[in-house]
Figure 1 (tube, rainbow, N blue to C red):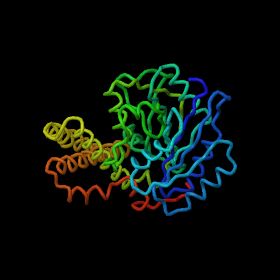
Figure 2: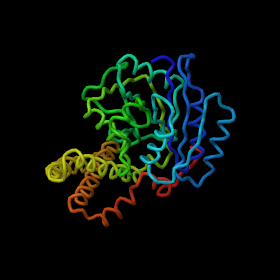
Figure 3: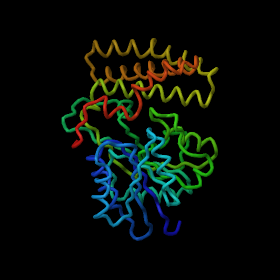
Figure 4: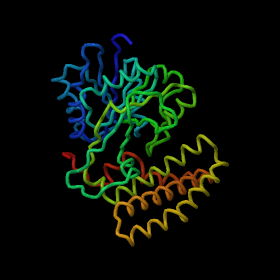
Length: 331
């Protein structure tokens, strides 16, 4: 791994103020003159002045920073365009609402070198709004993008898989298993990619030390957002289960998850409400919302009712977050 070139791919859509901060954190990565890197911003059809923001940051950057526009809507479409544009032997994925610690890339490369892995993931820490007072359960923090790993670099064995907001992939992995699934417009294409990599025998490593911070705007810590994110998560899991196990086996998963929702999470929700435990109440509601999303997607996939699925999915599509919720771009 002598003097590797890393391409950092940053998909973005109508979030130019946060993108500016994200890029600033990327242009000051520590390299110790041992590797070089570039930044590729993929504008997924924004109506905001995204190109101007990229030009502004590029003008004062010592790092090569390029802009491409991808009109085909969807997070996986943007990722795939970024991979195609990237020149590096490694492709690092980063989101436009994140901030990278200065040693982020250095730690990813170190983890890859120590483990000989071809796919490496690090930790994502939610940066909650300062006014947030309610404690969140690990599941709810996961809906906000938290991905916590402990200890230094090691080959992943049966633990949580890396997340797309903090992942570095060797170019040869794409050559081996292909790109991201463009049908996964609700999100989850990164998890699907890692699962495919693991299934094909590619070594995956995780490490605590490559850290990025996920900036959480106020609307994301509301009950309305958690409902939206939970149902989207349920649909994503159902789609991936269908890909892995087929429609026939989906009925067993559907029965198990529905039973758990009715027999376990619903009674625990009632108890938490009676006990006025806001943290547990939100946790159980999110699990129930996820079960509803799973059931709805399972029914759509099983009956091939594509029209009804289209109407349902359109409300949960990843990019709809920008228009579904009131967004303060300066957060």
